[in-house]
Amino acid sequence: MTIHIISVVPELLESPFSHSIMKRAADKGLMTVTVHHLRDWAVNAYGMVDDYQFGGGAGMVMMCEPLVNAIEELNAKFAFDEIIYLTPDGVVFEQGMANALSLKNSLLFICGHYKGIDQRVRDHFITKEISIGDFVLSGGELAAAVIVDAIGRIIPGVLNDETSALFDSFQDNLLAPPVYTRPEEFRGWKVPDVLMSGDHKKIEDWRFDQALARTSERRPDLIRNDE
Ligand code: ADE
Image (cartoon, rainbow, N blue to C red):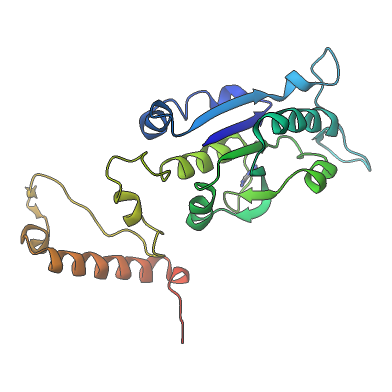
């Protein structure tokens, strides 16, 4: 998968994809992330990419021209499946969206700043608008990093243990069950007997019960009531 990100603060995205699982995805050639500086498409020699908003009010708006020139130039080369704008007024991101996006070939993310981007760019170029939650960040970069991480780790071949992403919280609308590792007893706190039993069926049932209990308690909204 090819991912491109347009930002006015590309430094914010230098590290998130250079470590751990995202690095593995890149090293295996399964995901490449390229960050572009919007100022490379600035309208003047001062690097201008934003301007005052019509109608008055505090805060700058990211201008059409640099964004449209950047999007058109990159899209001509990479034929994006989706052009995604990160914004707090977008659709709230969840695992189902990560799964769907992980099947695409090429994605472009646009990080907003200040008061956001000129509505005409949204109307004519953006194919999806995504929020990572009901709070306002200072820009879209950290949201882009969150989404690319969630997508990257489920691209087939990225995780060593192919099955492990399938058992993540949310993959079946349930939160993940508790996990334990050695030692079997620490400060008198013991690992549940069932996990030491070697009985795989019992362990599977226990994990399911725990996941269900945790989900009912913390996120009852995830449990569908089909009746
Ligand atoms: N930009 C600012 N806040 C955001 C949010 N919650 N999600 C996505 N992009 C944003």
